Amino acid sequence: MGIKFLEVIKPFCAVLPEIQKPERKIQFREKVLWTAITLFIFLVCCQIPLFGIMSSDSADPFYWMRVILASNRGTLMELGISPIVTSGLIMQLLAGAKIIEVGDTPKDRALFNGAQKLFGMIITIGQAIVYVMTGMYGDPAEMGAGICLLIIFQLFVAGLIVLLLDELLQKGYGLGSGISLFIATNICETIVWKAFSPTTINTGRGTEFEGAVIALFHLLATRTDKVRALREAFYRQNLPNLMNLIATVFVFAVVIYFQDVSGGGPARSYPVGGLCYYLSPPESMGAIFEDPVHVVVYIIFMLGSCAFFSKTWIEVSGSSAKDVAKQLKEQQMVMRGHRDTSMVHELNRYIPTAAAFGGLCIGALSVLADFLGAIGSGTGILLAVTIIYQYFEIFVKEQAEVGGMGALFF
Image (tube, rainbow, N blue to C red; front, side):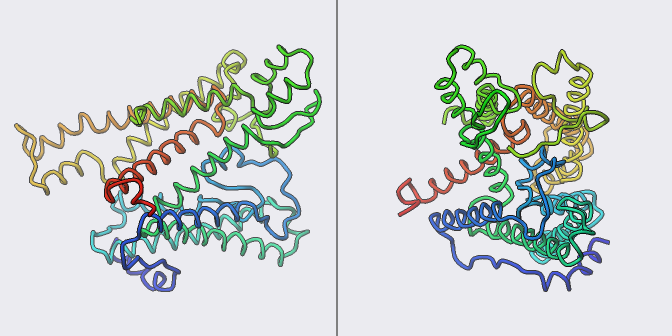
């Protein structure tokens, strides 16, 4: 079935846009340049508004997802990386569950990557149509068919750009992957903006700056009661405050420690009831006393889903006890005192448990960050630190290969 599936999509893969692999070794400074160009294109697309939309000022139902999907409402990056992530996840699950079979030959891998790109383009079109027809940019009847098609076309082209930028980096022209780069950039941009934003907002208590750090100096300079000004800078509601910033730094430090390198606003949509309310993070630590049921349900959901998906992912991604035992056998490695069948049983005692425990730890850290009000959400900070750490490893590896810091750039 798998071979038939890959053969079916083969004619379509031949006409898909593709980035050719480099024919020579790309120097580190060239990789940095291409990575910077890729990032620049992404950031420009994040600022170019979609032509033809009637309004994007209403409450944003996807506000809490935009940080980790690297999307920006009302711009060419409205969909962010969601199409490519969704297509990649679906293809990996299908391959891991043996619904489709992918060999280790370059031909099969190329067809698999082509299928992933094709599904990414189809998902982009599907999401664009849903966004337009559900009134995200205004009533489709008032905008007309021409404007609706134009918006769908813009979103499709932007999604195709994201696919090609990611492929450009993954083919070896740049550092890391486009998905990781865009996520980390979006999260870090959010944190910096919430800390130093010069935007002024009328809160009813007077004009205040959105950025937590700038607001501190502004409040101290304009308020006669300095103690109250400090308290407001640290604990003000509905705007970034210094406690949010401190919590963000704390979570960064904790994640970096676990990575073992310690030695080295828009309109928001808040759910107020129903299932979405109980599965969304509480706004502050005070929610523990105000609505303990919400807090308990959220913690159980986060920890349970993280543990479940961690355990499930090893089964479908080729990392289960059976797969590991097979890899050990192919490498002619054995466990002393265990036959092939008993080795699978022995590995099953550790691998699923370790995966579930790792998921629990990640979920607990994410919940802690959400409770502390960390900027960018707990999940976003975990992603950002992990991605930055990966780039740190790439940098160290490249430095070791060329023999020094100076040789990297000169």
